[in-house]
Image (cartoon, rainbow, N blue to C red; front, top):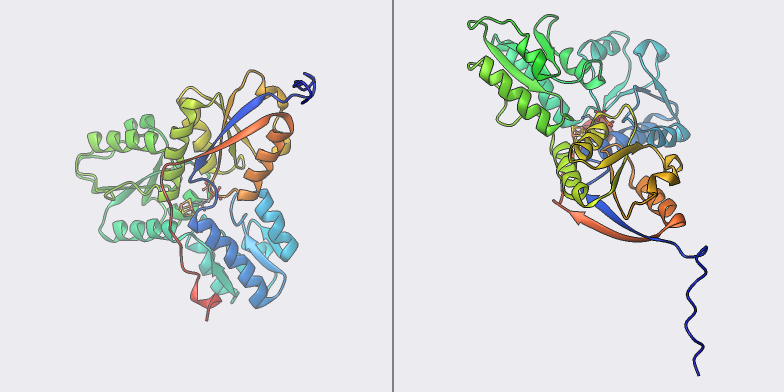
Length: 324
Ligand code: 10E
Ligand code: SF4
């Protein structure tokens, strides 16, 4: 005869936790490419290879590349003569490669091709005689890089609808607008609408320059947030696209937190929580997503579900100088 069923002692039983994992999440094509550029540069030129600014905004990625022989600096004057240098995925002002050429440095540009596309649009708008209104976050390296494609005074930064309201261009000033690639899709729509209402003659790209990866990750969070009691976003505090994912979830009324590693999760966050939504910014490796899942599984009986909102197939070519 079978022994009667014994339920586990209550102290051993883990409460169930549904995990809604967003897809797409994590690395985009520009981040994959930038990391591969640093790895290939180390293979080709030998260590150390200098990298100007964090190649992408993620400490785990940066530490892994340091272990392979990369040295991270903020400015070119920290790079010794003769050492190779890679420019980060966020892009650099024109003055940076110009300075590298002046010093006869070997340099490789890991700027994401979608950021470079905005750089070229900026140049074209200036050639066409238009002043540029640039929508972006002040002080972000991508913004510094894009603003540095054109002469001083040729571009004006706006961050909010209020900033648009205080612009004082006359109706005769030819204007165009461009945007940072990692902005909030919803905020940017409002800012662009305010620009077009105030300056009906303003010229802009067909869709704003927010990239496919940014918009896909925001749409994926919109799909998981309503069914979640808490959304965890893996990303760094200086990662613009990751911060936007936290905002998206919070604006849908769901509690959301940015974490860099699983060790930052406070178990008290899970009190009364039945479903956790999980995603990762474009610079956060999938390994860190698994680390979070494993951490949660230490405390709760986790049931994983992946919610796919779109498939991504984007791949960018490496620079010729690393493939020839
Ligand atoms: O702060 P960001 O989101 O711009 O950068 P990240 O390094 O977190 O993610 C990659 C995004 C890039 C390089 C900007 N388009
Ligand atoms: Fe390129 Fe977009 Fe990734 Fe930035 S977030 S690196 S623009 S693909």
